[in-house]
Image 1 (cartoon, each protein chain N blue to C red):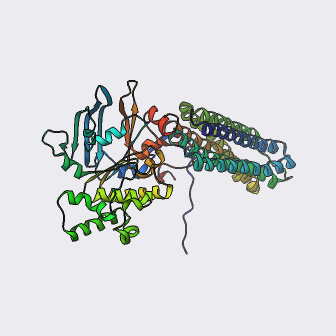
Image 2 (image 1 turned 60 degrees about the vertical axis):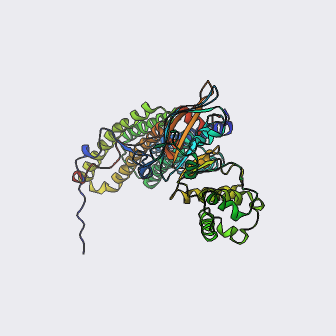
Image 3 (image 1 turned 30 degrees about the vertical axis):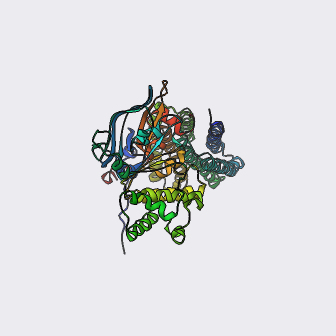
Amino acid sequence: MNFVKPQTISPTPSLFRTAPKRQKVDFVGEISQKSNWETLPIKISTENVSVFYGNFQALRNISINIPKNRITALIGPSGCGKSTLLRSFNRMNDLVSNVRVEGQILLDGTNIYAPNIDIVDIRQRIGMVFQRPNPFPMSIFDNVAYGPRLYGINKKHVLAEIVERSLRQASVWDDLKDKLNQSGLALSGGQQQRLCIARALAVEPSVILMDEPASALDPIATMKIEELMENLKENYTIVIVTHNMQQAARVSDFTAFLMIDEDKSGFMVEMGTTEQIFTNPRNKQTEDYVSGRFG
Amino acid sequence: MPRQTLDREIHHLQDEVLLLGSMVEQSMLNAIDTLKHRDLPAARRVYKEDDLINEKRYAIENRVLILFATQQPIAHDLRLLAAILEVITELERMGDYAKGIAKINLLIGKDDIQLPIREISRMADLAVMMLHRALSAFITEDVQMAYRIPQEDDLVDELYNEIYRKNVENMIANPEDIDQTNYVMWIVHNIERMADRVTNICERTIFIATGELLEIDASDDEWDDEDSL
């Protein structure tokens, strides 16, 4: 038989503590420790980046670190320059006349605006997916093989491997494997967008920029894109611009909030883990924006 | 203000939390009153009216869940609504303490029993006052007040300890009164627990305002280490 020692009660004055003791509990707990971005390797880093369209300053002194193999969301009201910032990451803004970029944008530590940089190489390493699915008016196969062919790959079996791998990575292989010769334009919106993602993946980039990739899609197709992003981040660094804050909250690990100043130029208010930005933002402007009271 | 619906609903919910708080306060005061006057029919009413407190709690919880689903509250709104869920749980449990006291009154029945009613009343008044102020702080998000209120729990604990000592002495001196003394212990234990739970409401007030989940370890019946047991 087990005997349990009777519990003795200490003298009554010590029954209760008298002085309140405060213990701080980290609200976001373990999750925030996992994604401690101070220690994560950085894929893209900007230092005091300002972007001008002629005399108009679209972005002002943006300094941001994009962690490698994570999803970073850029949010903010229309006109705050988030798309401009995204496009400056792969020098898409070069296509706009009168554009001028000041400051540095480092990809793996190399300034992509340095004079000796090969823009084609930059765009191979940083793929882009746009708001509206924009497959080329050609077959599904040729859409995906388009980039590799540009880089000189012409052997059919190599291209076939690339097409299959890319479509698989974009979670659309099972849907499309039996109709690779059909036009990409004949697909549903969601399939077209995943085809465009496969096309971006075909040239083996390390970064994927997404400019509102699901805003033209229905909820099911949107969910598929979001799941796809989660799978892709294992191998790619993803930066997404989205107006849909719930989407930013669902898919991203980090969120940067941009705002418009009185002179209409965009600036970064706050960047943090997505958990922090959506549960306890540090800045009042961020709070007002994410809780839907501004913008 | 583009979120008029959410804001309106939140204000309505805050009113409902205050209403639930008033019901709990009244229930505790009524329970003590019935004890004071040994009014058994009134005690039966207090016991039964706890159902209303429970219903109100579930109505508020339901409303909060609907807002989560339909309005997707974020940041401060999210913290506030999550805190409301916690606070109404605390309030409902406090209602149970009042119900428990009414039940003890009914168990004592028509037995002649000497209750330290003055001390019990004083304890209940203090606990109800703490709750009232804690709910004010909760609604106004007054962090300073939320830090101060748990310290007042010491007064409740002092009274509890005083009654406890007297009860132990009474049990030793009059072992035949152990049942009755035990009733007294349960009554004051319920009041003491109510005051403890006020601390939890204060913690949620701090959480809403600052986003920090703090444990204000005031007078909860936890010990620093096992050696003190």
